[in-house]
Length: 477
Image (cartoon, rainbow, N blue to C red; front, side, top):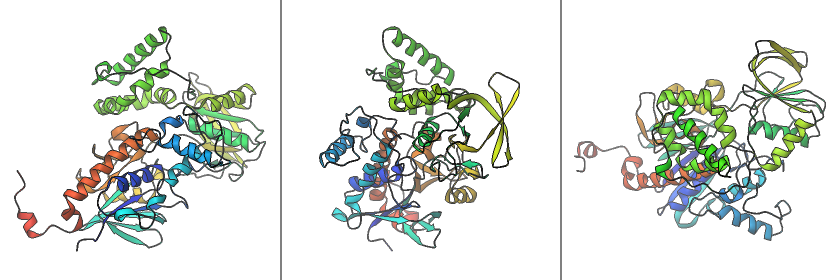
């Protein structure tokens, strides 16, 4: 029987899930119910924007953080309105080029859905279900979802928006970077060992500083690269004719190096070149062969990440001060083993370019490396089950789900689903640059248009099983 109202369920209530929900509800001209399933007590924040640490800043300037591609000033105007209301936690001297606290951005994202909670305008409404979705499957009438507490629901479409793969924290001496140091059992004079030297490490060092940490901090990665800092730069527009479309990973790296060096020689900044390339990164990635993608991940990814995903200037100053003071040590090395020892652990490592094995005793190990694969230890019960039963499959590189250009998932057999989709970091294998808000908002806007079109044109197929007449009817010419 046809449902009285079209229904989409989004699994994951972080930024990706909320942005997609809002785009769906804004674009729909027909009655539409969206259910957002989120295991955390609040929506819109996810891991990235749940922090209350004022030193945890956005890594993108405020003027480029609007939730809507066609309303570039939406976030800046929200902040201006909030400041006008004399909110104590809103910076008084904010400019569009500012890097604002991530918690503030979480407030913005969470507020986007407020007009749609319950009975929204024109039959468009949003329901938030707090709980963990553990099962999602297609059925004759659409999709069915089941939560860990036994609740279930039926819908026409489902979208996976669960964000980055989760990392399992095992031994007692390990901590995740999202738990405040005190809650993780880190004492002020402990020696803290951080796996990874990227933006997550930067955040955790500042969390330790806020907690009054006095002990040494060791941050280690294979190359020991720190994110580069943002600087005010002039735009360097690149047109389609300038881009070496179809180039291999090695050829693209050479082109980028020459382009940046030439621009610097003319008084410019390499950051302008990297930023100018941004509109084309997804198409360049998609043009790579499978072998080129593997080579990029193995040899160039770390270099790309530190130049592309930069830290706020204030964060740079804090990290530099910690290094200069001797509290923070950045080490380029490969970890060769970890042995639990008493109340801590002994980390064995080999420095880059050296054959000698070294060891250091530490009180706590914090896992700040990005979880870029879909190994069982990194997947939620939902994704683990969907991968196991073949509803979805990983891409050839194992860094995300196998999806089409329209974000529809592929099953183990390669069948493209008409009812289950994915957004955000889960689609990294198909789009690569899909972890920052400017990329995610564009993806959500496009997917919302696709889903609304499907619900409108193919409503009968989503609402009920095909009849015998449907099965025998000749296709439209």
